[in-house]
Each structure stands twice: as C-alpha cells, then as structure tokens.
Length: 254
Length: 351
Ligand SMILES: Cc1cc2nc3c(=O)[nH]c(=O)nc-3n(C[C@H](O)[C@H](O)[C@H](O)COP(=O)(O)OP(=O)(O)OC[C@H]3O[C@@H](n4cnc5c(N)ncnc54)[C@H](O)[C@@H]3O)c2cc1C
Ligand SMILES: Nc1ncnc2c1ncn2[C@@H]1O[C@H](COP(=O)(O)O)[C@@H](O)[C@H]1O
Image (cartoon, rainbow over all chains, first blue to last red; front, side, top):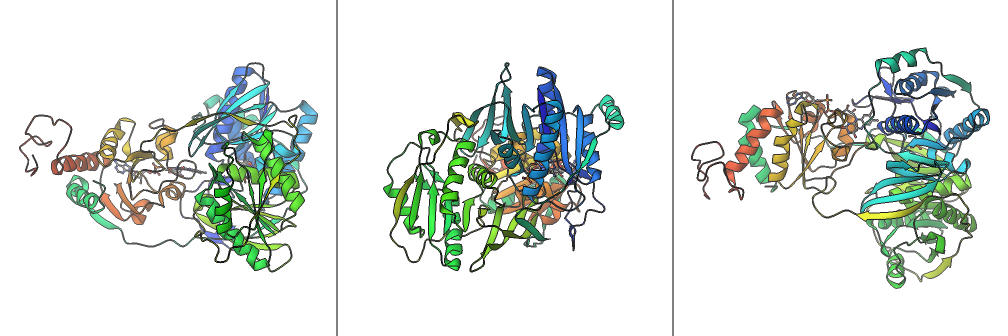
C-alpha cells in the first residue's frame, strides 16, 4: 500500500514564546514535527512493514523543512517531498491547495495513495482543517482524532478508533481514505543508526509552488494575560511534608 | 442571517452550544440580522418541544432540523455534505459552531465543500455592520498564544473555543419556526461512519479529577510513580504525567497532561519533577492551585505554581504520604496494629 504522511516544520521550544513584529521570534529555536505527526509516521512505517508498499512524507514550507523530512526518513519513511513556499505563514486554504496539487503530481507519477495521514491539528497554527480540505478535494473520507487503526487484510477497508468525551467511537471507511491522528496511537521509535545514515544520504524532492491566499489572514500574535502570583515556598525536602499536608487540608482535598 | 450550528446531547443544548448561541446572537444583532439554528440529532429522540424551547430562550427565530435516514449514524462526510447544502441554500453571513471534535469536523467539511475560510477556536469575533469582513481572535499553540486575524468571505465560518463566552439567554425572545431540512444525499459518496460506540464507566478520570498527581522526568522511572499513585489514592485523585514519562514508556499516553495530551482543571495539580514546558503548562494552567515539587527552584513550573517544595520527589512524596497516614485514621490495615506508619506509636488522636 502507498501511504502519504503530511508533516509541518514547527518550533520545538518549551520556553516562554518571544514575539517580535513578524510574530514568533524563531531565531534561536530548534524545530520539530508535532507528536501527532510523529505517530502518523510511525503508523505508516508499521503498516508498510506489515502489508508492503511505501511511505512518502510531504511538507509545505521553507527549504529548511528538509530537516523534518530527513527525520521521517530516519524513522523508516521511504521518500520525502518538500514544496517550497518560503518562510511566510500560509492560511489553511492555501496550504491545502498546495498539498492537493502536490498529491496530484505524486499520484500521476506513481499511483494513488491508499492512506493519507495528517496530524489532528498543527501544534502552532492549530487550524484543525488542512487534512479535511485535502481529503474532500481528493474525494476521500476522513476521520479525525484517531488513536487506533486496523486495515483489513484485503486492503479495502479500515477501522478507526477515536476517544470522545463519553467513551470510544469506532469508524469504518473504505480505502482510499484520509486519517488525522493523535498522539497515543502508538509509541514512535527512536531513529536507528542505520535509519540516520539512510536519511543523511537521502535526497528529498524539492518543488516550488505558486500560492494563492485564502480568506483568513493573521494580523498579529500576542500573549494571553496571565495572572501573576507569588509562589509560596513550603520548604525543602522531606521536612516540608507537614506544610504540604496542611495545604491539602486547607484545600479540603483530604 | 447568522446561522448557529447547535450540537445536541440527547436533544438538549450542550454547554458549548449555549456559548455558541450567545456569541452568534451578538453577531446577528450587530448586523441587524436574524439568528437561525441548524441541528443534527443522532440520539434517536423525536420530541422537538424541549429543544425548541431552549433554542427560543437563546434568541433563535428559525430552526432547521437536518434530517435524512443516512444521517442517523454520525458520518463526517454525510453530515458535512448536508451542512454544506443548507449553508449554500441559506447563504448566511456567518456560521458559528463550538470547537468540539464533531462540530469542528463538520465545519471543516462544510468549509472544504464550499471553499470558504474557517477560523477555528475563536475567543472573540467582531462583525462589521455589513460587508464581508470580520475581525477575530483565536487560540494558538494549545493556548500559549492568541492570534488576531481578519477573515473575508461571503459566508464566514467560525468555531468558538470552549469557555471563551459566558452563556446568556436572550433578553427578548420571539417566535420560533421549525423546519425540517432534507438534504439530497447519496449512499455512494465515499464516507466514514460510526459502527460502534462504547461509553466509559464512571470513576475518576484525568479530565474530571479534583486532584491530579503528575510526574515527569524527575520521577526517574516507571517504579518512581508508586508513591505518586499512593498519594493520588489518598486524596481521591488521578495520576498524570509529562510527555517525557510517556515517551520513555513509564506511563501510558492516556495519563499525559498537555497540548497533545489531556487538559486538566483540578482544584489542585501536584507536579512532581516536571519542568513546566509551555506544551505541558497549557494542559495544567486550568488548575485552581498548583503545587510543584522540584529540585530546581528556577524551573518554570515552580515560578508559576501556587506552592512549591524544593527537593527530590523520591523523598518528598513518600514523606507527604507518611504524614497523611499519620494524621488521618486509615481504613486500610496498618503495618502492625496500634503502630504508626512511621514505625512507632504515633500521636494519631483518632486511633
Ligand atoms: C508540539 C509539542 C507538543 C508537546 N506536547 C506535550 C504534552 O502534551 N505534554 C507534555 O508534558 N509535554 C509535551 N511536549 C514536550 C515538552 O516540550 C517537554 O519536553 C516536556 O513537557 C518535558 O517533560 P518533563 O518536565 O518531565 O521533563 P524536563 O523538561 O526534562 O524536566 C524535568 C524536571 O524535573 C526536575 N527534576 C529532576 N530530577 C528531580 C528529582 N529527583 N526530584 C524533583 N525534581 C527533579 C528538573 O529540575 C526538571 O525541572 C510537547 C512538545 C512539543 C514540541
Ligand atoms: N505546511 C504544512 N505542510 C504539510 N502538512 C501540513 C502543513 N500544515 C498542516 N499540515 C497537515 O495538516 C494537519 C492539520 O493542520 P491544521 O489544519 O493547521 O491544524 C497537520 O497536522 C499536518 O499533518
């Protein structure tokens, strides 16, 4: 089976965001892909190991996103495609349109994808829609929030499990299909030494794309107000235990 | 008109639906347009009167019940196609929905089918009196940042972040007309559908617990969680963890608190050996009180916490557990009858 995984290069910092006139100051930040998308890569690699086929990773963004494609290849993906749209932020309609064009080219060249994987939401922009737009444009059913995937042996249908506030829902859909996954679907592997070597030698295909903007435009980013409060130091080490239990009693949780 | 996509739970408005309706009504009134509502109901319930009464309270004047045999089980594509048909027919200036899993999914399907922009997780939306320009603020990075944005569209689609709006019934209510909208649907449209649903049993869940005892890298390993579990048990709470604990296989992912885990809102969040990276912080910032236990007095979570203990979690948590046992009469058998947990006759008043 042929599987496509869409990944986005995003800042990895866990520190307080620094903003400048253009938005997030990313000069000193490391980059990564979302945990959701890491699980998508892992699942694709496992499915191909079981059923045969290949995993293609696609990213839309600056040329530096090559780093994220190589990471996916080091985890076991077969090849990477980078659509170079520069460093500016695209709105979700534009991103989806670029992906749809790229998918068209990839499918013309090597046949249709049986599965397309997305993250449930991008960790920075969080539009919750790029995957659905691509799925609709390419005529595929799509389920989001997925934490369990079971492909039938005939490769014609797939069962998808998602958590909802009340419990669990199981979906069935014919293939080809698209799926947006959430972390918890699996435990992604750490890239092996062999994988890393392969990724170093691999060459991602880089294509350029014309972008036409959609109807949503970011004006600026800002920090939400946070209530500042002094931290009450209850003490050091085991000696602080009585003070801690006083607090538990005060808060009536005991 | 402004169209509210109202999600129902067994025929009743969900809390997020009341928030959605409140915001949608404000937008409608700014623009001098009527408020209408669209609902899907897969609960098998057919008594409309209570739903109609609730919608009227929130200022809805016309209610479209979307109904078709193919919609009786939830399907993102079929619900999305039906919603897109109604939106195309009504051509509202805006469609507003809550940011739940399903509502977001159906709104994205609608946006995709009509090639309209959709702004997700809005906290404020400002309408101009006419025209097709909107200003909004939306949540980004799981709650770490806000984005001010502009949206231009013949029909603008929005989802509203949970808790962003204080729900309020309308001060003036009119008469409600109810209509059934029957979309044209085709079973051959490739679609996913729900084939099975299981309901979670009761019991303390991470999302609903009053106390969450969470561990991170500082706990040191899977075994290190034993005292945290003991503490959670004593306070009737749940155990949580950071992504480092999940990634190392110390805890299952369902315990993970944070941007890509669960968001918690307990009265007390006890963070043991967790630094407080922003992606973790957005998952626990809803807690009323935070107690951080950390060797590093400068860890971000220590600075943001209500209370802190500086020290090794491996020493502090067992000491807290022992102190609780010393103070409270335990229903569990103690190591030796009449002997305190710390090994000698304690001064436990109730024993
Ligand atoms: C897109 C994205 C999404 C993410 N989503 C999540 C998420 O949902 N949840 C999440 O948690 N993380 C998430 N992360 C990861 C996050 O950025 C951090 O890497 C993670 O939260 C760090 O976990 P930690 O605090 O346990 O570890 P560290 O950051 O390594 O902190 C360990 C802390 O333990 C303290 N410590 C060490 N030894 C002891 C001891 N003996 N006693 C007491 N204290 C000790 C240290 O001083 C330190 O403060 C995400 C990251 C990205 C990029
Ligand atoms: N620039 C991008 N390049 C590749 N995939 C993307 C990009 N942006 C979003 N996606 C995919 O779409 C998912 C949802 O993104 P979003 O709609 O922004 O929340 C992400 O998890 C990715 O799988």
